[in-house]
Length: 200
Image (cartoon, rainbow, N blue to C red; front, side, top):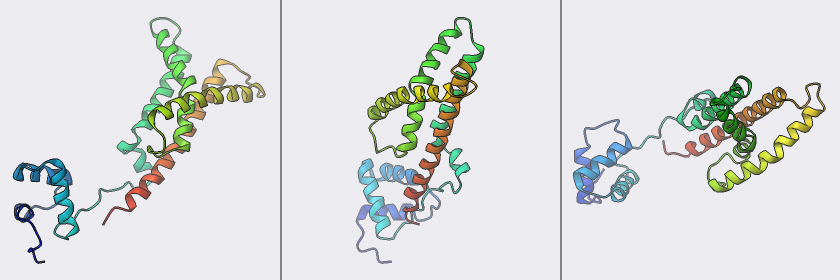
């Protein structure tokens, strides 16, 4: 491919990287910044121009092809943190009765009742992070939790278990985990769609 439409910087970069294969994009940028003394922005633009002209190939990162792979990826850390919070809260509700861990029970119980059910519902309804600002998510999570928890109590009132500590804790835990799984699956679908558009 003729190289007369390349700048001197682009020619030097191509000469230096000629024999290098399977280099990550971040390493590519760092090398350009170091060798040519370019800013991060100019280095990124240089790589983009070289890619557009066909001198370098950029392969997309491997995208988890199955839901269980996505569930083990770094994008799903929020789900596992939430699951740990729910499990620890339920355990403290049932097994902690004396200070100082009793105060932990109060804190986790408050988060579990006032935030977690609404937060998981918001994540299920709006799985993409750009749809709502963080403050809006936080406020809606508290508001929806204040609406969901009484509804759970109302439903439990018409069951043989009634409104007692054990049925309420278990019901809220199951509801929160179910909504979190729905949110995780919806986030996985969006993740696949967003990464399918990357150039091959």
